[in-house]
Amino acid sequence: MAGDRIEAADTEPGNWLAHGRTYDEQRHSPLADIDADNVAELGLAWYWDTEDTRGLEATPIVVDGVVFTTGTWSRVYANDGRTGELIWRYDPEVPKTWGKYACCDVVNRGVAVWKGRVFVATLDGRLVALDAGTGEVIWEILTIDPERPYTITGAPRVVKDLVVIGNGGGEYGVRGYVTAYDWETGAERWRFWTVPGPSIPVST
Image 1: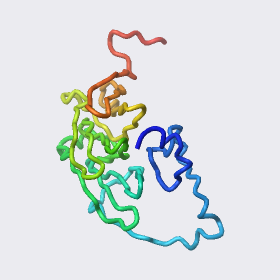
Image 2: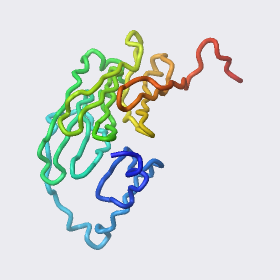
Image 3: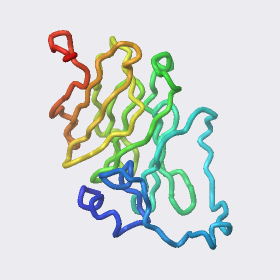
């Protein structure tokens, strides 16, 4: 999947290709088969147990019948959209001690899917590229200073072959920034600091 499919998302409303469905992230589905007259007929088609009792906050990404989502500790799951059957599971094995830096539990808000790869950011500050078909790791990049209490719970965004990710930890005094990485190699392309440093004057 590439950007042209996200831009034309309304032509394939059965998929949910990006975090907010489209680049403007309105989170609105154009599907119209369910309405006020038949909504009461909805029932459970399947369920799949994550085997976890902690917070689940991800927006599932649906691409060509496969549901990609995340759970606690930045784990990633790929399920068959028709049956719920687990296709693969990836555990980045985040050190449990890192949970003390997460203000609002060890949640994760989801993945990005791009050209056959699934991108996930981990609680301990890594950005990982996975094979969308197998869940195998293609590359992994540390995006933070591991000596500082940074976390990542947000979902990456991919635009024009750049994987963009931010971070958390401001409540512990770290400087926030947004970084873009090459989707294919993981090489850093740019970084924008959202919080001024000591050498940058702040207007009053």
